[in-house]
Image (cartoon, rainbow, N blue to C red; front, side, top):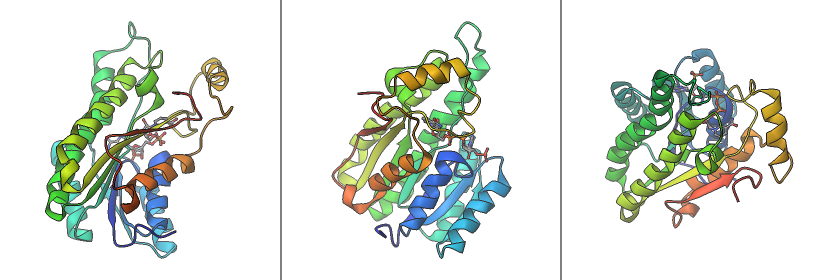
Length: 248
Ligand code: NAP
């Protein structure tokens, strides 16, 4: 399958986990990829090496995507290197879990800034570039926690639910300009983000996943790549739950 030939993509937080799998999948389908990272340069360069080693095109660009100036620099670097940005995947994200009575306001701010404000900043930068070509695919990586809520994640769930509102509003703003905006809401996937979840929570989660197992990063990447393709042109403002049936 090579339906992204000639397309260019920015994937935020692509040095590890789900973002890495998305970058690899978009590249496998023919897109040139900007592998954004914040604090893992070596891991990001490994992703680039994996893509170029397979005959694809990729560059790594450092940017803390919760910072407006760094987001502007990221898009400038992408356009300078690849000429345009057709696909944006807002994937960068963090957790700072705790019960609300123990959660510090700074943990709320960090999660909202990294997961939600970052996506707003990247969407704003992307729209400016995509409008010129009257073409764009924006995919926001939300979460089942943003769809149905999760105890201990008031900050994270709020950020991920916020992404759904951002997705639908932006989809309406640019639906008639060839730009689609959708969200993918993964269920539980084993990555650095989830590897330290308390054992009792993991056991409890396993009982509420209808397919009976956690997802893997490739399953999230496939849904994202589908929404990034030309063939998804009539899908906008939607949320695809890739969660083994958790949110139905
Ligand atoms: P992960 O393994 O912890 O990776 C997080 C990625 O985000 C890293 O590449 C990290 O880059 C990047 N990042 C963090 N803060 C950043 C910032 N300020 N600027 C730029 N990049 C930043 O997490 P993951 O599990 O793959 O999660 C990826 C996305 O999927 C997140 O949005 C997460 O909320 C969502 N999600 C995950 C699950 C799950 O079960 N894993 C479920 C639902 C949704 P550096 O390494 O360079 O810092």
